[in-house]
Amino acid sequence: MPDSKDIIVDLYDIVACGDYYYNNAEFDNAMECYNRAIELSPEKSELYRKRALMYMFLHKNDEALIDCSKALEIERSAESYVYCALAYYYMEEYEKTITNYTKAIELSPNDSAYYYARGECYWRLNDCVNAILDYTKAINLNPNCSFYYFHARALVYAKMEQYENAIKDESKAIELCPANEVYYSLRAWYYLNLNKTKEALDDINRCLNDLGGVCADNYVLRAKIYTALNDYDNALLDYTSAIDYAFSIMDTNISVYYQLRGEFYQLIGNNELAEADFKKAEEHSINQ
Image (cartoon, rainbow, N blue to C red; front, side, top):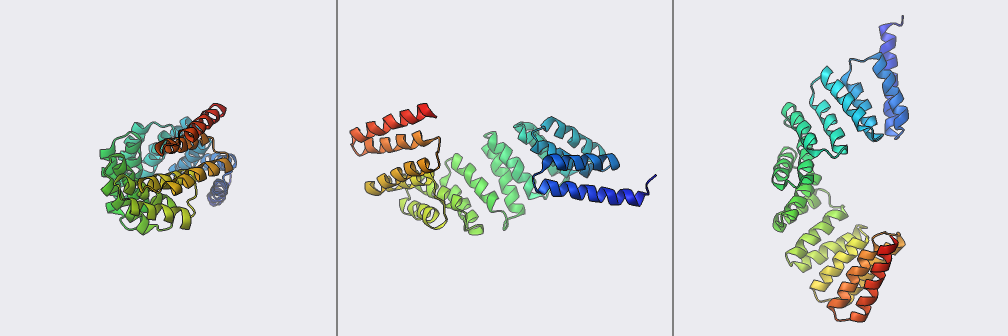
């Protein structure tokens, strides 16, 4: 019979090996290690949580929930409820996800990440009021290190068409994470909705020219800003750049960009080119 110290050493090595495989995305190998670890020490809730996570990555969420339940039987902890929440989240069962995050919050009420995660579920259920409440709680618990909390709340405010509040939150996200091109692009969109075209143009230029935020949608956004400024030459250049970029990456949504340029041609009275773009949009839509 092996000495208990040998079992502890073996368990430590096996778990470490599983963690190594997990960190290298070798989930099947990690699973084998965690299976062996559970055989050696079936009373440790942490091991069931680790294996549950592997099941989630392998799209076996029912099995993950069984392990999460086992972890909760051993130890009713916030972390185990969070793992249950994750399994339900991957199953897109957001009400059950919320229930488990709520239980985690009851046990650990000062963890900002739990409020943020529950807020995202409310957001996915179009419950903007509760999403705002949870994101606000997360921000209050962690105001200086949570740029993504401010960004998330900005998205909810924008959905509610509260663009001034959205701009305030996105600006705070930018202050905390100034190199994120997405935040500038979104703030440009919020400014445009308030007809603050100069500020919108400054932000989208920063995104496209300085931060590497080159994509078809950002070219389209700048085209719309130029259109609002009656700068139709630059607007046309950007609609064309959107199409060229979409071609370069074989974007399956290229029909959308032809449609948008066609609508722009219609706006400026060039119906012949508009019809040509509408035809191309239809062709690409059929070929998708």
